[in-house]
Image 1 (tube, one colour):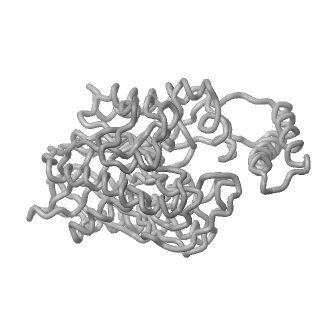
Image 2 (cartoon, rainbow, N blue to C red; image 1 turned 45 degrees about the vertical axis):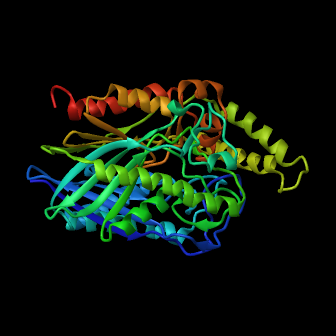
Image 3 (spheres, rainbow, N blue to C red; image 1 turned 180 degrees about the vertical axis):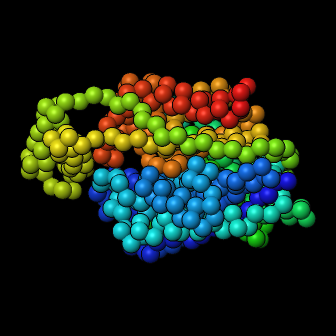
Length: 448
């Protein structure tokens, strides 16, 4: 018998915390709550083993230490082992930084300290809520939301708000959403999940309101239409995809937020209406620790790079100068690297990848903002009948760029690793594809 449970917990910080993203040391402090932030969880169980639980959080990123603490709390309360708990993020940039980035918003220590407890509360509630239920699935059009920011042209605000707007190269974005629907024995919907890949950045540097961006607002709409239900957003391959409205003034952004959220909600509604039951004969999960290769640098390399940044910092410009503030980000990272190497400490550390099998559904989670081409190689090679990539999960290692962008360098390939105080990847496209398809083989291959 299949059982499903739902849970939620409030993650909303107090007003005044800095919001994540958009520039070095921009002091983007929140001024109010437009929508509350949530941890939303869906647990699954059959008669043949322990439950698995997926927790989607309305936050930008999560780090390994937080995930490990969440899993400890869940195991203490329910007995569910860590490898069967997936902790992922919607990646909203209108919520707080959760600790770790250099210069891209300062984390709020009290909120960060409480974060594992709040996330665990949702997972525990979902496990305690397990009841006989059916799981259904649909793949439906989800258009007019994303544009590839690496290979396509962003529309004007007027163009983006037209209901018939589509990107010039839709094939470089997600044009469909996968929708999961949980119904109890009476046929009432108790929960749903939408899987879609796009940066939630309708609201940007000029906006200071706390909310879950288009995916959070859209999920809230569906929950209000189905009172008592809990809805998850599973972020997919968002690495090179932005919302069609981005980097606009506050008033225009807040107005566009409702428009883009409504487009996402419309797709989820269609998915709920069209979803067909899945036969869930098996539930399983794996969460190996992995280490991806990085570019190699010597101590002398870092000393030379630091000298370049210190020259920029001390040349005399104001701290209003963005390049000065970026130089501080880089210099901070290089000083950490130098200190670690001089003391014999590791600069980079292992992370988690995760695979879950829920009947024909395969969830493949990685701690990245994954590019579309990487996702296409993963899903194209998967044996799972319904494979889904879950990004920004269990840890945060920045971007997994495709080979072209990695070779070109720039923000995703070079700058973001420094913001995280770590080194750029050597070949993340191929290594991530190989790693996640290895999980798929174990869960769905001939010998599984």
